[in-house]
Amino acid sequence: MSSPLSFRLEQYEGPLDLLLDLIRKQEIDIYDIPIAKITAQYLEYMQRAAEMDIELGAEFIYMAATLIHIKSRMLLPRDPALDEIEGEEDPRQELVERLLEHERFKNAAEMLQQKLLLEENVWSNPQIQAFLDEESSQELAVTLIDLVRTFQQVLERAKQKPSYEVPGEDVSVPQMILRLKGWLEALKPGETLSAMELFEQQRSRRAMVALFLAILELVRMQAVELTQKDLFGDIGLKRHRRFEEAFANGGAWESIEKGYQ
Image 1 (cartoon, rainbow, N blue to C red):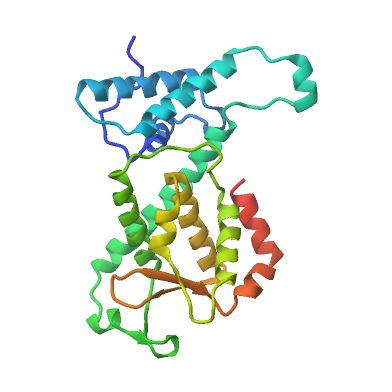
Image 2 (image 1 turned 180 degrees about the vertical axis):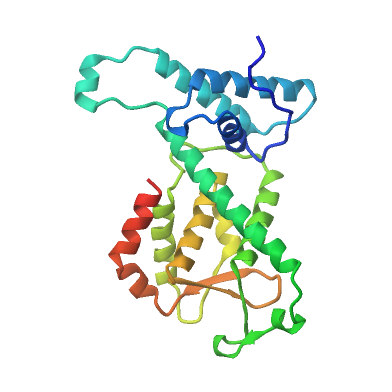
């Protein structure tokens, strides 16, 4: 029986993109996903893709297995004794958290892409692009648009490599922020972290997204400065002069933790 959802066979960046599209088009509450219905539609997409010789990555197959596993867990009756000890756990919770985190990244990337298009279509003095900050050792002024470009380059390279979600390798945005804090604290005066190298060291797309969002949060907190030696070159991360002050602000850190729960 065909799914009630009518959609054309689009190309998606990954399985989370496909799931979000299915959920949003049908106006489904993301906190209460009808897992049987979504799983059937997801598998139908994979079947149609196979019929049209569209090659799907290993992450699509992994997600299909994950959905089927969640569906089977929801069908099995819970042990009342176990519920009293551990409390009732929704098998969909981890998937919901991954979808929400992925959606935050998509929204941030789309907003920055719109800003990039706007900047490219507005005339400005070409000398501004080559402006050098005399107080920052002849480093070019860097915008978040440059960071998005770097991230997009890494994602394009990652598409050419097999991608596997390794259990236990996932990291949340607050955890990634703490990792970055440690790496920045270990830098010697004048040293920077290469954004490109940091992205390429991540072992999953989800970790790359967490790193991207962590950098955005640190820039917003004025804990990190983005630097660039050459136009369109690699982006460096260094401690902002307000680095210690930013992390001493408990309210800012509390809002980040709540925002990514």
